[in-house]
Image 1 (cartoon, rainbow over the protein chains, first blue to last red):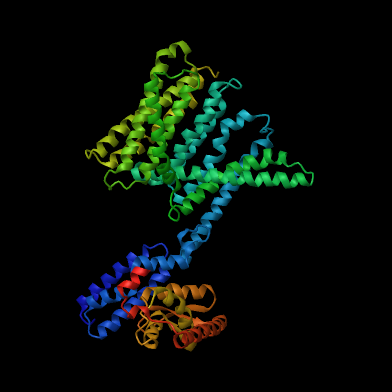
Image 2: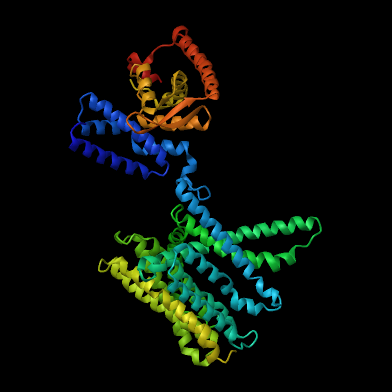
Length: 455
Length: 127
C-alpha cells in the first residue's frame, strides 16, 4: 500500500467496482458504501498478509461473491426497490427542497389554470350556453399556464418570454375576432387546430435555449408522449372518483351532477394538464418512459395489420370505398404511424447498429405509405366531384404533410438499415419537421376562416 | 466440506444475532467472527451477509447506525434490539430441539449407510 502507484491503481479498481455495483437497481448507494467498506478492509487484511494490491483486490472481489447473485439477494430482501418510487424521492436532502418548491409551484399553476377557466363565467359566458366560445379558447386556458410553469422552471430570458406572450395574445385574438357562422366548419377546424399550433409555443418554453438543438426538441417529443399517457391515467382516475362521488351522494339524495359539469370537469381537466406535466418532469429520470414501451408493443402489431390490409386489397381487388370520413381515417392512421416512429426514434440509442426492430419499423412506415397512396389515389380521382370544403382541404393538407414526413423518414430509415446512413439523420429530420405541423395548424386557424367565409 | 446453501441460509439468523448479542459489530467483523467460530467450515460468500443484516433490520431484530471508523471511512454498525434478543432465544430453543433430534437419529436409529457398500449385480437387477 505504501507504493503510490499501486494505491492509485487500487483506487481506480475500487472505483470501477463501485460504479459497476451502483448500476444494480436493487443495490442502493448506502449499500454500496457498506460493501465498499467491507472490500477495503478485506483488501487491507490481505495486503497485510503479504499479497500485492492487485491480487488482494481480486481475492476480495471473489470473496464478495458473484455480483448477479448478490444483486438477486438484495432484490429478494428489498423487492420494493425494483419498483421505482416517485412519491418518496430518495434523493439527498439538498434536492428535496427543490423538488418540494417545484411541486408547490406546479400545484399553484394548476389551481390558477383551474380558476381561469371559471373567469368567463363571471362575465356571463357559461359553458352550457356558449360551448363554442369554450371550444375555441380551451387551449388558451391551459397552455399559457403550462408555458408559464416552464418559463419559471427553466428561468427563460425575458426576450423569449415576450415572444411566447405575443404568440398567446395573437392566438387569443384570432380565436375570437372572426365572425364565425355558428356551428360552421371553419370554427370547428380552428378549435381543433389552435391547440396544435400552441403546443409548439409550449415546446419552445419547455426546451428553452435548447429549442434549436435536436436534443431539446426530442426531449419535448418525449415529454409530449409521457404527458399524454399521464393525462389519460389521471383522467381515468378522475372518472372513477366522480363515479364514486355521484354514487355515494345519490345514496343520500343529493344530485352532484351540476357540480360535475360546471366545476369538476372543466377545472379538473385543465388543472390535470399542469399536474401531469409536473409529474412527467419529476419522474423523467425515475421511471422508465412509457411511450417507447407502448411503441415497442404496437409497432409490430400495426405493421402486421397494415401488411394484411395491403395484401387483402391487392388479392380481392377492392378499391378504397370513398366516403367523407375516409380521408380523416387515413390521416389518423398516418398520425399513429408517425407517433410509433417518433417514439421509437426518441428511445433509440443512435449509436447502436440496425436490428430486427428497425426492419419492422421500415415495414410499418412503407406499408402505411402504400395504404395511404391507395386512399389518396381514389380520392384524387374524384376530389373535384366532391368539391373543396374546408374540412376536406384541411384533411388533405394534413395528409400531404404526414406523407412528406413519412416518405422522407422511410428513405432515411432504409438508408440506415442498409448501413448507408446514420440514425441521427432520422432523428434530425423528425425534429426539424416539428414546426411544420404548427405552421399548418396556424394556417388553418388564421387563413381558412377568411378564405371560406367563416362557414 | 461444503455446507449446502439452505443450511447456511437457515443458520445465518441465529449466528448473526448471537454475534451481535455479544457486542455491536459491522459486516466484515461479523464475517471474521463466523469464520473463527466455525473453524473455517462455514464459508459464507461475503456479499450474502448484507441482505441478511438488512432483513434482520426490517424485522426489527437489529438496528443500524453509521459511524466513521478510525481510518476515516464510513462504516455501518449493527446493534441487536430487545426484539432481536427474544428472537435469538426463540431460535436457540428451536435449534436445540433440532440438534437433540439429530443427535438421537445418528445414535439410536439403526440405518445402514448404503453409500459405503458396493451393490451386488443381482440386487440391482432384482430392483
